[in-house]
Length: 192
Image (cartoon, rainbow, N blue to C red; front, side, top):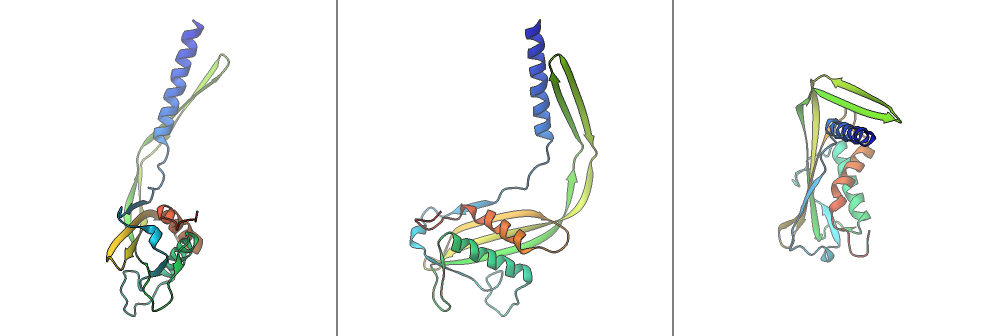
């Protein structure tokens, strides 16, 4: 009879853990990246950011947030062993980026959480309920392209989207986001 009680208790604990895991809030989606399998990243040494957020070399002004993005991209690539190309020279990689934000409705569904536990011959349980809600949020998306100017081909692309908080965007937040986005960008040989 004890074996049956332990088995039933074990099943309840497993069921409770499964329900809690399913009911946990989802994390932000992970950045995605694509790499040209024919690209030889060991041959790339220098990079340059293309003027303007969309690569337009016109006399567009750069916003404060775009300045944060450009500084973060530059810092991350230097940390991976790449060197910023001197002005007026052709880089091995031309880095372009697109940044956008969009208002969206976020739906928080109705949730039920169940917890089961016990100590010795005592057992306990709890149930939590959360109501559904809808709210307006701003989602930011950043796409970074690495282009081989000799081949005129994109050799790497990364994309990340995140819910933006209210208020000002801090440089540290941008730096962390760009670092996460460029995590899969190939480091130069002998680096990282």
